[in-house]
Length: 444
Image 1 (cartoon, one colour):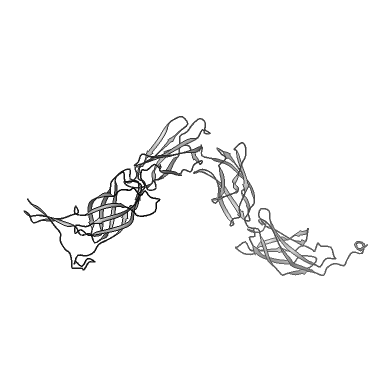
Image 2 (cartoon, helix red, strand yellow):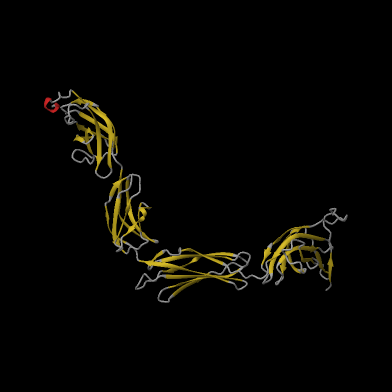
């Protein structure tokens, strides 16, 4: 068998040298910078790259041959910041992916500095990619490692599985390993290894978890050690402390209702509370910061935030451990908008319809909202006789006699009071006619 190397011309294109061979150029060298402790696989892009062909004369078969290409790193003629004594470095071409991509190996131990990339094709033509590659020399920087979950200093619940998320970043280097180990106060360990993908500088591991170990003293913390190593043998490590707790228990919540405007002081009593335990209503933490934990860790105090009217569960949370408690009801303060009719005799007895919103009334004898008339602190209750509709926005009542001293104007406000939600006032809501004459004795 005889192998013959042939240079085969492609479609007729006039090149810069006057031949009909197409010109080629270099556009990118990837990676553009790298540590050179080891061989660096690289890609040279540009083209069109037209190899020679190896022909088997006995069979007539032919295959492309990249051995006639020659590539090199040439010291860049640039700033004195780079070593002027750098030597040219021959590169090994390992394959042709397509007419625009050559596979190239950069040998190890390339001196630190900036290089032009030169390529000579099988036809003897040369193209140069200025400043195409920067050798960073030996890698002496360890990878940066990060623990994303559980967060350092957070609480985890005894007996529960906890997902661990760790990451490593080696910059221009390449990772070879990533792992974490959990160590309990008694010395027992749980570990997980996350092999990074080949030739990668960054990796994140999310498929590991540990079960929180119990112990006689939960004040003794857990230790998570995260370790990553790169291909140069540099090791990056960090240690994070994790606190343990038991699942919280709610014994009581006082009160269980308050105004929708918020700022109701609430006290939650229970067990297994920690300094990091928080109280939430409908997922919203009470203030300040989920409540203040008392010194004996048996109660948490705080104030509700403003919320839409309705009932939602009170929860206590330590880390990911959540205990459900009773419902807390947010109540809107009643609002009086109109009184009809808006006048009547001073002796009282006028039947009026009071229109507004957020009234509590299910029928005679079940009125939760108190209605009264007066001026300032002088008030007299209105006798509510019925709810005037299916929605809590209309009630019927009987006006009391005029109670303001005769020298008053006869015009009074209507007040609506809810013992939980608060009070509102409609000024000048009703006018009493035929006021009694002034008392002469009172005038003296």
